[in-house]
Image 1 (spheres, rainbow, N blue to C red):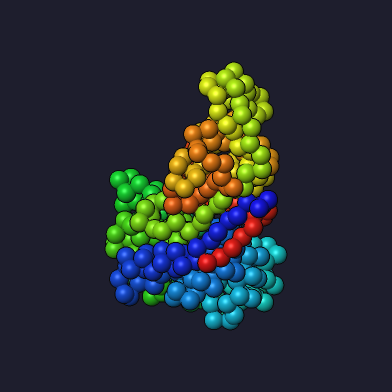
Image 2 (image 1 turned 120 degrees about the horizontal axis):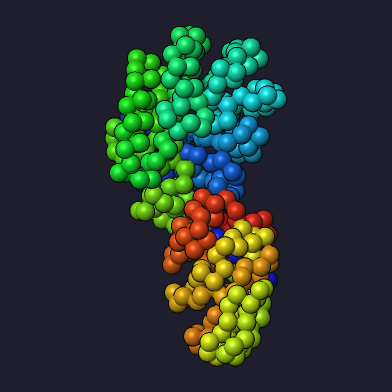
Length: 345
């Protein structure tokens, strides 16, 4: 076994979608965010699973991501593009029947001129200052936009992972005011917004990270397990170093295993000397720096030399690993490399 093994639990993915769907009222639709190749897990397998679970509306980041999803799901899925109608996207949007979320006056103009009868949505900026029409722009453009019958209107919460942040209530008030009186489906919430409560749900929600077992949906099932094979072991004496730069120094005799994965596989370099791996539930500390293709792990306390160690799974979530690397679970998931042997269950 020379290649690290990434196991993707599609049953858990579907159960997480159903669980988040169950947090909203029956009238509220639950869509799914599948951008970045299904958060790094494979857009085709992810979208097919979510479609079978009941999702009918999918969100991607850029138009080019729509090809694999359209091919997988066929003509009936609604595929929405967060980045909107960018210059050069017209043919892709039309041929794949994508629904761009128009973010600016420039995009509104481009879409209405290039594809006047093509479906579109609108994104509003309610305070995040990232994408969408600001309140004054929306006031100026609203009559024209509504005359073109948008498919939906949405905004995005900046601080939904922290329920105590007052920004959530401010954005809710702003969004409610901006969509007052519209007669099309509206959406404010991704995973964090779903968990904030029913006043944030509106007509449909757009869970992303929660589908894949990430924070803030702490009740979600883990979706990924990553097992990394042991290439070699060696006994290390007190005073000897391990890895580049000698950043780890043995203070007692131990045994160190060298494993076949590294930062080229998305195992972030900053987790060196801080992360742990697991053998049948027993933690084994990562010692030394993460190399491009290799990890070194202290297994001196184990009774046997394992064939592999788990770095993601039931004992350690993507968020646990992210904490060791000083980042977030999103980055861990979407960084998982192409060299893994992937299996789906």
